[in-house]
Amino acid sequence: MREFTDEALRELSMSPRARLVRRLGGSEVAALREELAALEREHRGQRERYLDWVSTILATAAERHGPAGLRILTNRTLVYFAAYPDVEPVRAEAPAPMADEIAAAAGWDDPGGALEIFDRREGEWRQAIDVLRDWLSTLLSEVYSTWGPDELEAFHRRRGEDALRGLMADIDRPAGERLVNLVRLLQGHFTDLAVSEDDEKYTIVQDPCGTCSRQVLDGRFGAGLGLAVVADEHPVAWGGRPTTIYRTHVPIWHVEMARERLGAPWPVNRCPSGLDGGACTILLYKDPRNPAAAARVPAPEPRDEGPHTP
Image: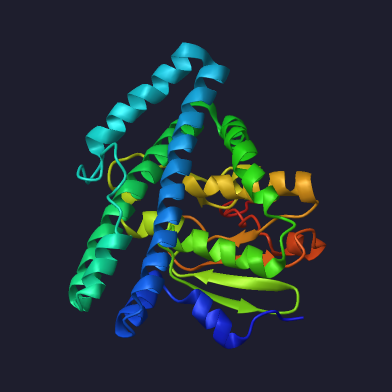
């Protein structure tokens, strides 16, 4: 049974900027302030999660490989910041709040000024979040290149214990509420998306995904950061599917660890392969334990064995 009308799904899919333009057109200052404050909470939450992820990677290196292992990642951090293509976003503080400033501009009947503030603040948030995404991706690349895919999985599992705790707390909420929460989280990642629904699931098409695909599209794999693409016949790469280093957490958290807790992958992330920066589809089953999800997980890609000589 469907829970949302097509109109409601279009409303849910609307980008934060398009929502702002609509509020400005109707002079809906209170609603505008509330929506922007919610968006900033998502940005702030993502930044905090990334800081925690970096900290967990470093702590796990120390726990599993001692001072020598931590030194390897510390050195890689120095190389990363020396090579990073945009020094400006490297700052300790989060960007300044924008909701009140934009609401004030709207109240002065200055929609152009309000949009200018929004675009500037969103750019600052994107930079502040991207530098952390790229840092943790660099550290995970070093984990993979130094210790291999088994250790990469172990590092993902260590962080996944904390990440999945939050997801599991959401698991028994009504399906529609889980959808809204996920969409808001994804928009906090700067994702452009469209949502559709059938009787058993919601389909969220991200084009592009605001984390993995945008990392490819923004040229981070050609920026001298040494980011890895993993293609081992191993769970971190869906059994043998070229996978960017950041994406390798997906088959561990949302396939392997989700199966251990729910008996099924959740949600199903159909990420692009390799350095493809195209659309990424999420299948959010209304019943998180639906066994049909297993058949929709990305499959390993056939390997080119070269010409066969009898």
